[in-house]
Image (cartoon, rainbow over the protein chains, first blue to last red):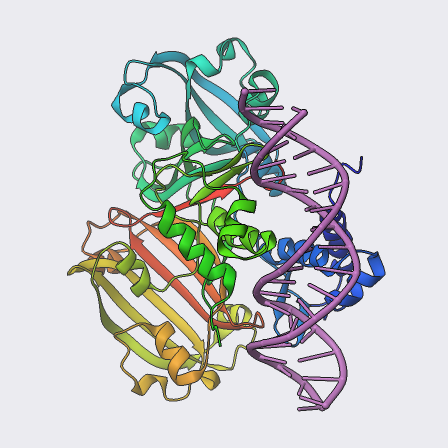
Length: 236
Length: 236
DNA sequence: TAGTGGTCTAGACCACCAT
DNA sequence: TGGTGGTCTAGACCACTAC
């Protein structure tokens, strides 16, 4: 009952081994790693694929695999605000501004794949990091999938709450990122001068069957938040 | 001399087959596809992996593989402005504002992994789509890697130019996305009211050995441009 | 319980890089 | 030319879903 897959164990082992290595240091060959760890080469490749996707190493055909230069960031993954702040070494705090059940309306009905008359739970929160405002978050969830949510403690990670109490696992999300002029209310809540700009992220969270579970608009302070990631060419 | 890999051919075949299918339509099983196309199941999985990464299909263990609901966007990949606009169905046009050789300076030296006294080529361009301004682009390249670049036609795709004339293939890029208040010059060039906001993308392009080849800051009009992509949880 | 995707093996040949 | 990563095969067993 080896709960973790071999390639996952191997991935962590390789990460540990290459952790302190200078950029462009060659890794052992795939065949050597396979022999040393007593696994097949395909399994090694599976572990390596993950490391390449994470930006930890890069491959050059015919030459070898090498340690990537210190990476600003890994590739883009789905994270909760709580995880996001912890990754930045900040302590997240939440202030709930509103939590209610409302009619979905046209726009939410489309995003959540329901009807305009369906009930949705709306949670509006101000989220702070190390004591000062980071973003404003406006979450919408289909009411029938989260019974009793409004009675729960909404100051923590909503993703954790959905997973534990409602068996709702958000596995992927569609996101739209844009810049926006903040209105006076937003500026006041975020503690910035009126008329400033913010980073607006619209997200629809999907479960393992690609069914919408959550639609969230988050507005970040432009001076405190950015998005970092690595992209690759698909057809080289 | 089958230039394309089997899994790549298979990927395209599967894409074509599932193109018009309604969301959540099940695909044939991996074993069936393997048999039908005369390839091994591992090869089918390789093709499927690409489709999952692109957001075209999703897998449910024990149940099957299904067509994803109409996707707003595929996952994030590295594209040139020209490709980006074509993908949006817009016609890109370029106006070169400046093109010169300058001293790198501290910041560029760090980004391009060179010395502050090294020479860099700087190209500043206003890029339009369907006739109206879309973004301002400020590119820096190590001068010694792009001899004669300033004598070339800089109104097209710089990536194409680098590939064809200088054998510089940009395979990946580190990006930072943030919101920014436009200054008066930027606002004027982009044709928006002063004090508006824009989407600022800082990018460092890397070649196949993860060596910096290009550092670009692009400022997009907030009202005309957004970034759409799908993210997944790493550990489900 | 039957069938699915998830993982893994032990081979093999090819395309490419360095020398 | 020898060694690397890139691709592919034909099996096998496991974890999970649906019935």
